[in-house]
Length: 251
Ligand code: PGA
Image (cartoon, rainbow, N blue to C red; front, side):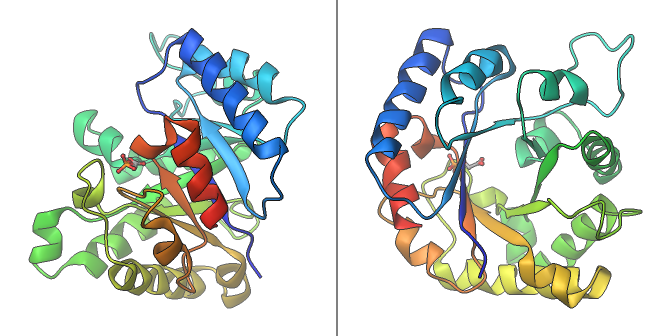
């Protein structure tokens, strides 16, 4: 039985004051509830340290939204895996579609990042997903297959023991138009099958595959009740404690 994992991707939102307020609210809400799901928050880099201190006495876990694949050196503006570890990050989102499209990250760059992350003991939340054009062109599975085989190239089941995959159809991100539970389940099942082929069936059986893309309080239950949907990567709806907690409760 896979435990559900709900992660909040804050993106480039929430300054220091907002961060303190939101984490405090989340802590209060979570303390009074008997939740079955794991909860991860992924604030911007500048607020990771503060968030880390605030969640210390709670069950909330910390993730970053990105990192560079080098260990240190002359890479102005970049953040290394050991920097993330040093402020208490356990997870790191890699390959988000906004990184791929706005910042030009290729499968190869993402693969290097996953390799560096696991080497430093960071757990990757590896994002994949097709664009609307690709879905309408009937090549969703082909796109997913390529993203997975390139992204995880050269990595073993041992390397990836703590991997989380997030299926995020690009057309569903921030659009208010989520994949239907059936559409999402179909791709999640396909992903699990691919991973079984690439690594092993037992690895695939324990792999957490999150769905992301316009997850809200009112569609979370239907999505999360699908057999291969093990959690959610939440953008817009994670910026308010009440909507985020409702998704956690649905899980
Ligand atoms: P959204 O974003 O929930 O706002 O669609 C999800 C994501 O980009 O991870």
